[in-house]
Image 1 (cartoon, rainbow, N blue to C red):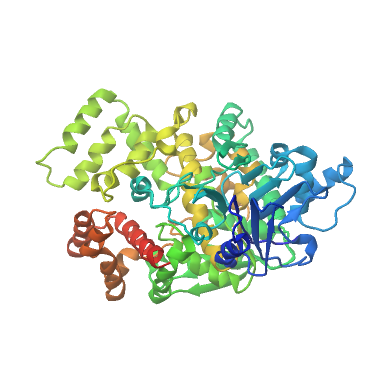
Image 2 (tube, helix red, strand yellow; image 1 turned 90 degrees about the vertical axis):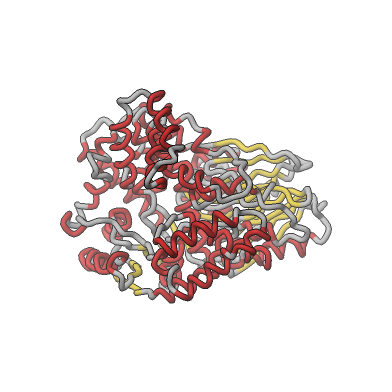
Length: 631
């Protein structure tokens, strides 16, 4: 199987210096595929595609991109993996849709399937992670496609009136004449969540294609049409309407079978494959099922810290020893982590402030020294009700719901504006939550209210986004509605962005077996009682894990890959860096954030120890802005 860590790019209606432009876009995403690059232009140069490639085997022209279909009708650039491409290839051969294949790449199979079955039917057949651009030379139509859950990125939009797309937003920004303004209406969302959710980006007229969507664009390439081909919401609705009928043990049997099948497909490679091991339920389950299906020792990787509050390396080592993996660990110092911070703006290309981005980068960098592909345990919390916040929302809503909404809303308004509050921050937090209409509204307010109060951005306008657009009531179970909220926004726009960008920065391919289509759809059929009882979540996933690892080995609080950022920011090196970015005169001159609010938050943290996560969000925005201005 050709392993392909790639980047794709392209533009329309910008024929002048087209070759120089596309090569510049390719160069900006060199890290996504440092082995080879390809470009293609239509006869009239109205459509131009670019591709960066890292292929561990099959470096022949048979696997090179941009690639043409056998008939010459389609041209494609593709980033990602189709894990079941052999099954699709066999189907094409058995049905005599194709006489033979000239190479062994999944891109060639994709193109043949597009010709034989059409785009939507082909995507329905595919299991994988991908961002695809396809040009139909007969109809002159461009089609962009993104995988079901958003593992691979795809930006698109308009620069100087020309349609552009790329895996890396930086590849769009390097285009000559790029003058797209910062979209200040996304800043309120960013300061709530620490990331910018699809379909928005930090720039006006540049967007992220949503997970599970297709973008179609006909000549003269002015009006893109976006539509879904798969939806996690529809999967959740279908699963709730068609619940699993077996016992919890039977559910664990089926989940184990599906995970094993997904992992087996994702372990296929002619290069070294390993896995991240954080010692949590999710990564331990993936590693256990990998080792159960491998004759060789699976390579596992973790990072540790000397601070016991943040260190799980000892537990990971114990699990690795029990499973018999070949384990590698790296203890990082504060200096190691701090050295990553200046790189973050370039790695992410737009403001992104999940501070676990730092240890994720470091574990990816260490892992890449030993393997080329690493499996990850992401999605266990969102699919199997694992987050502690799910229990707290359940508990708070259980107390609130017996009181009429009108009464709670009135009390909320009075308390929010109460001038006599002794501790205004705590009182306002509780007051805002009191005004929730539903469990999912409570979940949204628990994230949003403090950032809303702070009014960090000068622009008070805010785009509508998923959490306030979706009618979550069409899912009946309250816990499932909250998990769905995370699967629609937090998981694709935070977790998967973090993993993709940090791993790609060091040319490491990551794969997420729990995001296999069959696993995701099965998870939504499970009764909530199979996932969570009281404050204990991920029940059925643990049932699978405890078949391989003793329960007592796993019974401890989760820590994950986290760092003591609140402590480090008070130390001289980072404090000096932070105060340089938060300087009142600088922030005023920039004219984007409220300098008084920003400095008041920082002073309150330094003098009184009152930490707000928005401080890190501001620092990551200011760091990005500084890099963007010089970039």
